Image 1 (tube, rainbow, N blue to C red):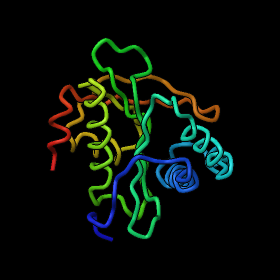
Image 2 (image 1 turned 135 degrees about the horizontal axis):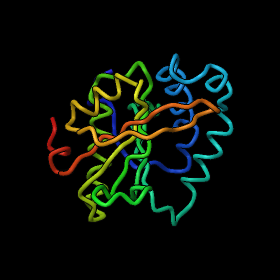
Image 3 (image 1 turned 90 degrees about the horizontal axis):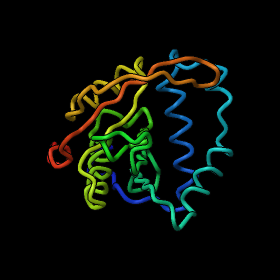
Image 4 (image 1 turned 90 degrees about the vertical axis):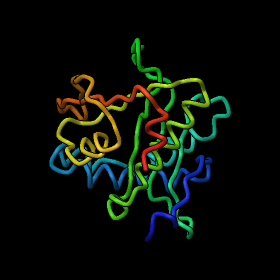
Length: 181
């Protein structure tokens, strides 16, 4: 599959099943060995699909969700974001989640999803953004660094009763992220 065979577009309620599949499958592949197996095995496609459908069905939802889809209609990745959630004084936008199926990683799709998110934020008058990533998720950290993300800070997080640490990467100039090729 070539990068050009993938389209990036805004998600619709009928995309909830595909987004849920990407969400669960990518959690299970990305976080294996980082998050406890009991937590990963307890993830539910049905629950995730209902959650994404509810989110996508709200006409007044202030957040955005972009998906990456093959020419055959398979959702292979997504990104969601909106306003930064912790009142950071500098970084006003946030990408809340970006996930790709393992077999399409490393093909420029994540970069395109980040660029779509940056464009959306700029259209909303927001020129800075941050994203949180688990400290032990080295491949994702390297990806954010490769597209210009700068280490900002760390914070503790609890997932499934497990204490972990997240690190924030930031962008001060979304135009430079969009211009990344």
